[in-house]
Image (cartoon, rainbow, N blue to C red; front, side, top):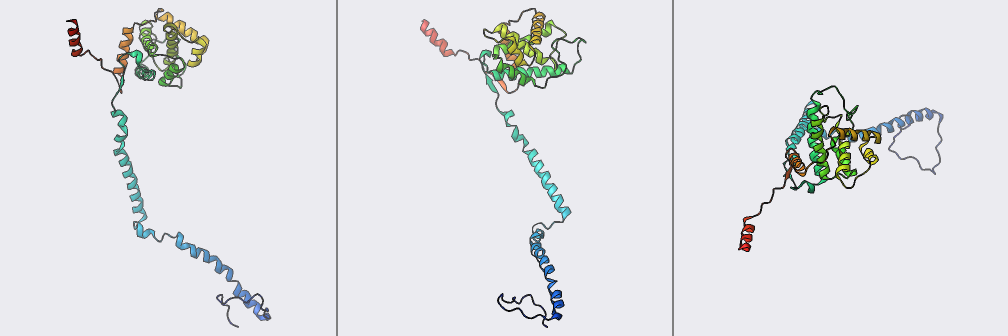
Amino acid sequence: MEPFDPTVPLRAADAPAPRKPPSTAAAEKVTVQPLPPSKAPEAPVERTPEIAPSHKPSTNPLSPAKRRSSQDHGIISAVEASQSSSPKRTRPNTSPPKVLPLRYELCDVEDMVILIANMIGELIETNDSLAMKSGNLTRFHSRTAPGISVLDYLQRLAKHATLTPPLLLSMVYYIDRLCALYPDFTINTLTVHRFLITAATVAGKGLSDSFWNNSFYARVGGVKVAELKLLELEFLYRVDWRIVPIPEVLEAYYKGLVERCDGYTIQEEVKPSSLEGDETDEIDD
């Protein structure tokens, strides 16, 4: 009997089946059994060229250790490049300062809030590092520091309580006046928020023609109405009910805030030219 050849095409479907002798049954079983295993290895044999990194040695002939070191060197070089290019990202610091108007009444509210928040931040940083002058706590002290920053809190007060630049400068004036007449009080992390809402309420009700009621100020400041009333009375009592600053004082505060804050400058005062003086002299003649 001839051996089984898988390349020979199978018989036609309409051809009569040959008579199989009983002795060839074992031979067919022996020859047919290797067929399933022969098909299974074909798939991995065909896929091995795609998975195997046959082209990597040609593109990167380095060993795994050298390849890893080269990758690390590439990472370090990228970090060094980013560090070397970091000064280019600090362009806003090199930009010219913003020019503010000479009169504080014309200053934008947002710019005034930034100036005041910068000054208060410096006071808080200084006073938090110092020990308390006395062990007495004031009504303005909180148990814990609120989770909102001074800048965000001032922006909230200025937006919802409609604080104008003169009112904001008056709040700065109240800081010096209260600290001078009430030695136990200092601006720090625990007192700044209660002081700001109290100063905003006093300035709005005492210096502005239109103002809100205490319930609205309390809701904006995040305190209870009864507590805000006590803070208002405490503040007025400590400053001897004198809450109206003169315009020259506010102007001095305005110039001082601009000088100590980077990125801002005041518009130069325009002096009358000599030509205008000559014209007036000719008219008089």
